[in-house]
Image (cartoon, rainbow, N blue to C red; front, top):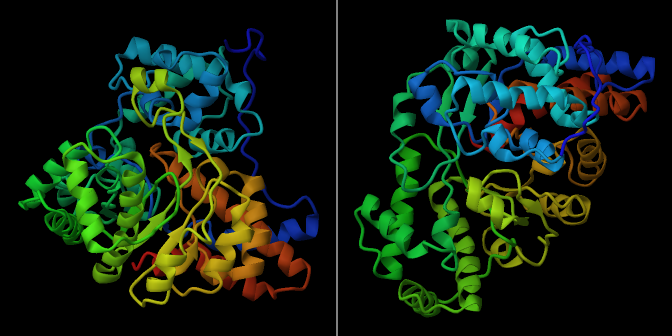
Amino acid sequence: MANPNPPAGAAPLTVHPDRLFPSDAGVRALARRLYEAVRDAPIVSPHGHVDPRMLAEDSPFPHATALFVQPDHYVTRVLHAAGIDLAELGVGHAPLPDEQARRAWRLLCANWHLFRGTPVRYWLESELSDVFGVDEQPSAATADALYDQIGDQLAQPSHRPRALLDRFRIEFLATTDDPADSLEHHAALAGLGTRVVPTFRPDRYLEPAKPGWADAVARLGAVADTDVGSYKGYLAALELRRQHFLDHRAVSADHSHADAIAEPLDVAEAERLYTDALAGALQPNGATAFRRHMLFEMARMSCDDGLVMTLHPGIHRNHHPGTLAAFGPDSGHDIPTTIEFTRALQPLLDRFGTHPNLHLVLFTVDATVYSREIAPLAGFYPAVYAGVPWWFLDNPSAIRSFQESVTEIAGFSRLSGFIDDTRAFCSIPARHDMARRLDAAHLARLVAAHRLDEDEGLDTLTALVVDQPRKVFKL
């Protein structure tokens, strides 16, 4: 269970203007100047998990728990590790009645000390201070007052989803969507000032070993109005749904599997495996071979239709079966594994690595491969970009290590730009602000070491914040 003796009482919530900047006064001044130049630049968010229905309906958020606790597995996993049941936090059970939501909020506030030294604490403090004007630290003593303070603001037009979208200066926002989705909510958002687009996420249709695969493929065929009884029809359905996403302004297709291997099969073998899969007769090694073949096919399709291909393998999904059964996927128990890219992607890059229409962005939660594999690949292949640290690595220490290792090998022009990858809507500006501060600090150190002029540092920072994600994601 959570610490029974947490610090008590109310303390001020202090968000220091120089947070994350170097301790050396001269370098800190450089970092501050660089940061100020991009602090208010528009946010480009090309990969995330905000629910488009929320923006389309533009209904008020019901309470603080719906913003800060329920959608944010960064928050809930820390509390769960301290012994708090996810059911008490409302995970998998939205919407919550006010009484239960208030209890969940109290648990977050009473255990605020658990977040010391984590990026979650940084993001939450930024959100509470910048978006809601909170000036006291969450605690057992302040929980109810903060819940009411935030609730009063959420009832105002200024804090509805679309108003916050404008306030956060989000220029571009990509969601993550099933290929069979109608995208009706994206259609309703077509006229917004912010460009809100879907992302094609086909994983479930590429893995015949997963339960429900045949039913999912049948549904895909139905929405594509295509007979998927053959391998040829299956490929046609995927291509048609990619076009449907392109028609709704999508720019990328996102992929996450157990490994990064993309290995093509000849057509006859792919047809045989597909037929066996539909019949439920495919062996595990055949299912793996088919999935790896289809990742190669996804690259081929990206060369044909231009969707950026993002790849983030190496996650043991739903590590705890009991939690999966009780709360469903994406409830905080996906755990990183080791990963390999160099040999895994060689067949794909041999065929498509110099194709002018392919942008392949490689992400990882295995930090050991940044300098060993991702940076060298991005430093040679025109199609490959190094995805910035995300998920378990989107913290200051991992980002600093990435900055020092990857750019030394591949250069700044081969980076993806920052990716917030979040379901927690109000954390988007906080996450981008953290990245801008860390980039400003890194470039300030290069200027102080006389490796860059200050104007070069500013040009580089501006590119990282705005130009690079637009370029990589073809905006």
